[in-house]
Image (tube, rainbow, N blue to C red; front, side, top):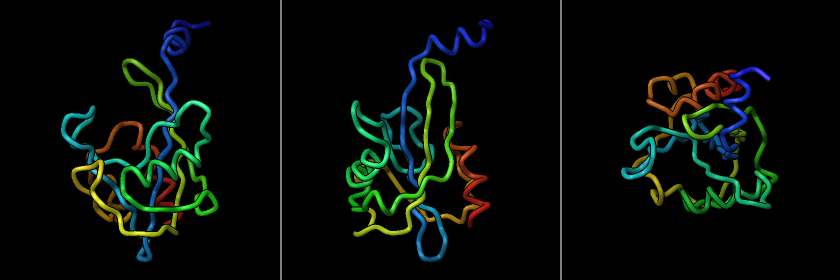
Length: 142
């Protein structure tokens, strides 16, 4: 095993699920991380950690309700891409789903702000490194 592979395997793997909510005008919702959390002020796709024994789609439905106050169903989620990124103290695996159908209006529950943005403008926002590879697939479909 190479030294690089050995260093990567020593870090815990964290599974986080993310969603690109897409509105009727083909804009994507991004949310700004709140003060006091890691990476505060950066813009991200809504979502969160997958709990032990939880499948990603169930976690995403739960996270969207907790973070934005909206309801959706697993059948409304379509997998689009994923990110695999190593941070200093863990490795992040993050599937990205798209969702065009939900109930309710997004609210600021967990974030300090949110915006509806054209996919080709997502690079204009400071985002966590792990989110950056997820932009191109969104541009491709929108």
